[in-house]
Image (cartoon, rainbow, N blue to C red; front, side, top):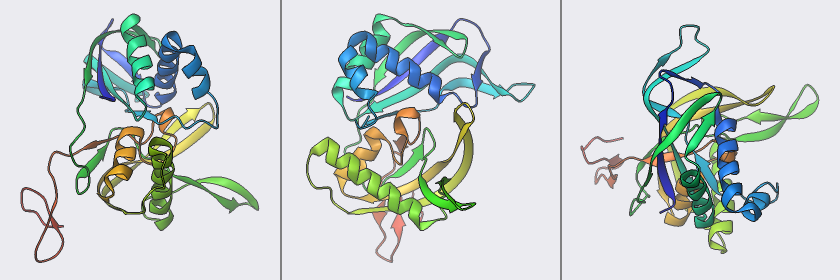
Length: 261
């Protein structure tokens, strides 16, 4: 089990959830890993080491927009998901949470109420996926005469090329063998969202509903470690829809409800 649902009980209700909060969750993850395994924590801070973990946005059982529209207000329990392709990372993070269940995030206090392991789907190819944190894909383009970071969108073919390239890199690190190229991705719905990942540094990423087919190892790499890039700062986590897709004899794909695409 390397995917978990973490539920937290708030000290106060409602509790605030900033729109850009992934860096705070990242800090929590690294602090808890360091508490249990300082050597692992140090290695994860190396820019050359693939992190191979991702996590969702912070959510609440009920939420609403704050009156001043500066953040969300959460009610009842807060929760988020954590996933990794490296069992050692999961053991350190979850162990650190259970050792010290009191959590402070962006000035709000919580107590860890439940850590629930989530089983992997038996098969991923042909499923519909929904993002739990948006997918980020960037490249370099010349702007104003200089190469600058450019956030790609699902309307651009390079978006899919770089997602596949990234999956193949993850596959190589996870399995240690030559990665396959069997991968197809079709976006069904896309919504952009702009986040401040560091003070003054912004990232446009995409909440997606998509179907993916191909090699199970490639898809598992994305499912466990995230699709796209910047997974360790809270981008690219997905959940698999429960309905499997099957081939339509007349062409196209059907889901279990018989809807063609």
